[in-house]
Length: 96
Image (cartoon, rainbow, N blue to C red; front, side, top):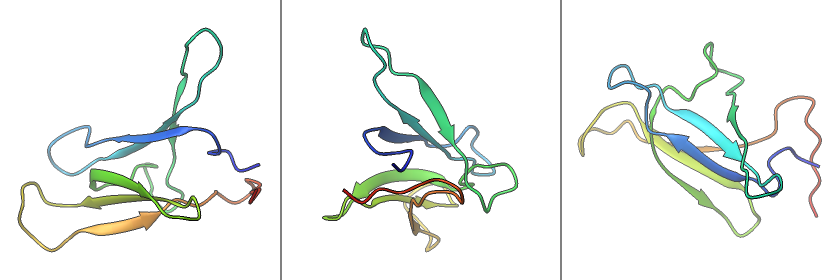
């Protein structure tokens, strides 16, 4: 089963204002109301972070998770990108 199945996926807008340093996170319930949080590492990033300001998340009708971000602050610019979250090499995926 893919590691994100049944998890709440969210992010930190950025750990600092510049440069953008958005972090992807996931949590799942583990008894007695506890939700341990773990950082989702971006395989193609040297520091494991998205390195964009995280603006929002979405899910399509197949259950695929997407994250939107950009690398400038404010409502200007054309640097927006949308990424689809996929399992890292070695993660098993179960499409049920």
